[in-house]
Image (cartoon, rainbow, N blue to C red; front, side, top):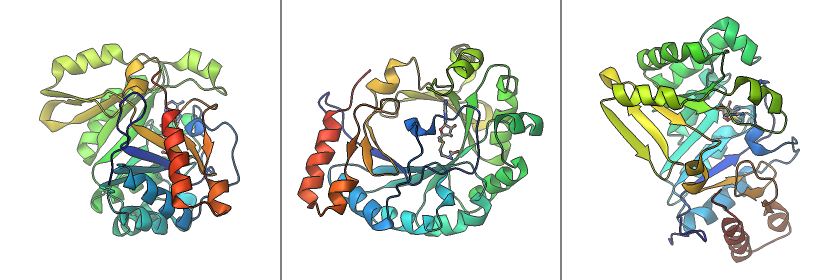
Length: 305
Ligand code: SAM
């Protein structure tokens, strides 16, 4: 197993695979993983198995499954089965809106899913229903089930939106800690369908980070996780802060390759101009070494800004 590096000397360590572009919720702010149009394509379980195997041969150790909503795929447990049995893969995670988590949690655990991130922007029903179309109680049941079946750590992804949920951040930290989860606070990203939304609701998390820094018993900077910072607050409560935008660390420390649900390597979250199709060649009979060349080309397209 060789470790591959990009042209800036960064090791490629993780994959983020979208296994469907379909979603059952409509969140106000959603960036759709940087893919503006919903595609109809869908990688099969065998195709996922093959591409993850190739990437793992070159040093990828962590895989995060996303969407759309990954739990809309009926064969989602098979997807985790093949990913978790790939040689070299040490950490398998998923990000979900939690609607079907109660139903699938045990099956996912059995299929090799290690941990889960659940989108939860609010625990106040009136705020939750302003942000998204789902059922809050169902999501909370999903989170509790995930903790019960040991999909740990369960991280709650909260996108901070000024005047919508930012007065709730301390309550969310408390909720996460009481439930046995970790709160992951995410800075709102601008995207092409939500420019106005961004201007109105962007909330600068820096002052809050300064408060966390003063309060924390420990602070960790996760260099190869886009420089995100983890704070250990009182009684062991953990909070992670992710600044995807206006943050040179996000790009500079990125060691991730994305894969779209229609089979393209996507080297950068918000860039549309550097993707590379591997599914068409794969379906046309490309050999593993052809696919490795496409993978290497995609890695060369990663940028630092
Ligand atoms: N449906 C799944 C879910 O809810 O986790 C997976 C897809 S969703 C696009 C993945 C994550 O992206 C969510 O946790 C959400 O918080 C984050 N996200 C989406 N749009 C965002 C934005 N404009 N700014 C910051 N984070 C965003």
